[in-house]
Amino acid sequence: MRQIFLDTETTGLSPDSGDRIIEIGCVEMINRRLSGRTLHRYLNPERRNHEDAVKIHGLTDDFLADKPLFASIVDDLLAFVADAEIVIHNANFDVGFLNEELRRLGRPKFPSFVSRITDSLSMAREMFPGKSNSLDALCKRLEVDNSNRALHGALLDAGLLAEVYIRLTRGQNALMIDAGEGGAANASLEALDFSRFELRVIPADAAEAAAHAAVLAEIDKASGGATVWRQLEPVA
Image (cartoon, rainbow, N blue to C red; front, side):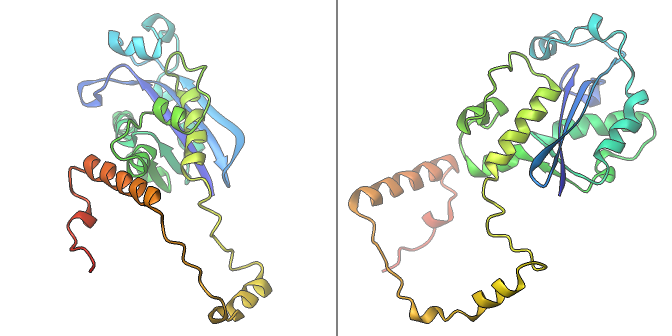
């Protein structure tokens, strides 16, 4: 499985209003391990930065003046991401900018070059409803060291996102079985008679039940009272 963790920095917030990409960072992971391959480019946006944007990424107009145009690096970028799963934090933002840059060059939209796009922000919101799920917040919650992140940087953020993603999906492969390997072992598992095992049920004590109720109440509050279990009749 080949994945690319991608981030961009931009002159502002709206590609529809003419804002442009000024930095692209990509980090490659193969089978959940960093391969060491990266792609990192600064770009001349052919327009001025918004002041608020410079405060975030620190990339001034003077610094970007002699950098290449997107048109000159687009083939390198598309070759790097080709047919991979692309993981982006708040994917709609970055993909919107990439689509607009490609449109200017008469190219198809970005998703047509890759196998799929995964939004890690959507994943985090499902896992941590009602919480802050910015990249900084996730680094803190998942104990990813981001002490070097004084300013936003596309390559740095792509690398942090890769670490965050691994921790968000920690253990997801533990239940996956390769049908092409371990055939004898799988056969022995299928032959087990589980009826001879007695399932031991340990009921929750009062403290555990109260803690569980508190967690459910927090989730219900974060969803605005839309949780399904609140709508079901209690079981007699």
